[in-house]
Image (cartoon, rainbow, N blue to C red; front, side):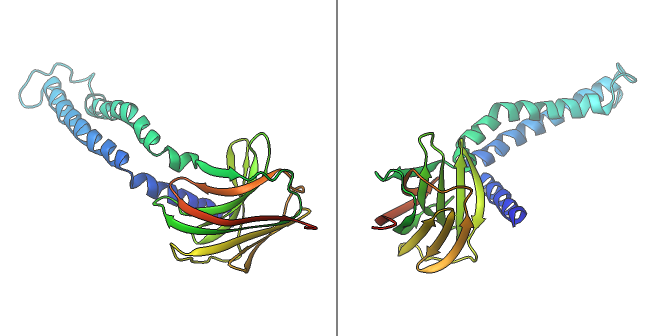
Length: 236
């Protein structure tokens, strides 16, 4: 299951990279530079090797590898070195997964139920809405989210700035855009349960009971609306 999700993650990232304008601009710039370098290198090699009746200046010392391929791919390396950083800068949101978390003023939430209503409005890279919980002072937290691009509910953990997959819901569910839906989690000790529109999809045993703030969560270019955020501790 983890290998399958890792493969899907890589495919998704490659698709987003290839769809970016900066990546195609990089190819557009590298193509003519490499082509020109290749044509120039062939001409210089022919002249230096005495091909076509010219003086054989370097018949033994200059090989096709040195005379053609090295100059050609040297131009490729130069272009990639100068332009590739701009591609990564343009696509940093796809690699860094900038999360957007809004914490409620509910401290030290232990056991109980947390529910939200959400509406997915737009998003080319992601269409996410989720519940943030176990938010620590150092920024570590957990989230159960729905992604309209993947049609699934997933539990993620954020530890020291690194996002890690924990568990996926038992089945995929397609939700219509611009419609309100309900996401709920129940916390009882280390037991976590999650449901979407009243359908139970997630069961997981946490390493330790949770505490800290709770809130709503989204990421990258998701446009999501939230309403009816309710955090109900046990006994209330």
